[in-house]
Length: 296
Image (cartoon, rainbow, N blue to C red; front, top):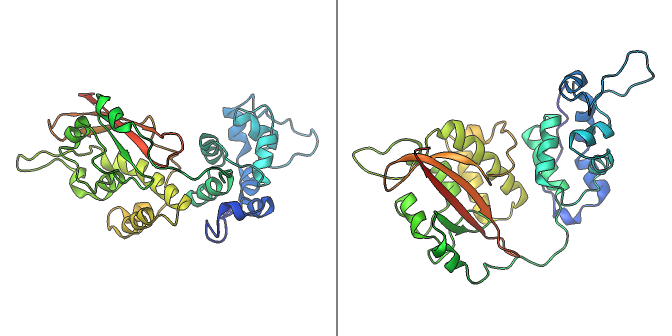
């Protein structure tokens, strides 16, 4: 059976301009995916949430019921999921949408539509800049830390601490973490000629597959952001990264809490970094913590 793909551009106009009916149409593929799943595999893996149907006991709809989808999502019933298919859910939890994508085996494009049209933000105050006091927070924090904007650009002036500067063996004023990870070719292999710089072991197995879906989801959510638009174009044009970026990417919800291999830029020691992301209240900027674990 051919996947029911969403039609039209993923963002035709502001999400706040869409009615529930328009969003229901955008998300109509959810019902088709739910009806087409292999029910027997769910009966085997989730016998409590999806009980086995006895032959000859009434008429049965194909796939999964709304109640079963709700139970698979850890909910009491199918009300929330039914509202999702009807386009009546705002500010859906990202981890729950990711679970929907896993259960229904959504394509990357379907997952992007799901995130955009089920995460329409409620009206609120416009995002403010970084509140005061965070320079002191950086200086007091013992691990590598820095501040970035919504497009991964380093905040100025020099909003990073000494541990972060040592981890990267120097941070330029125009540093962009995700661009450095994905488009700086020197980070994909060990340095040569006795030089030292930070680099990323298992780049193609760990870093690229996890970073690329995050970039694409960010661009889909903010297509008017100039930094993200330029990053999107550069990734698509890159001869090595481009085919992967434009292909079938696995849904990957966020980087917060990830543990990834990393070689320290100043010492050359191999270890792991634990990535944590914190957002000050009312700000679009984020505090990136790259907690270094040597020899892990």
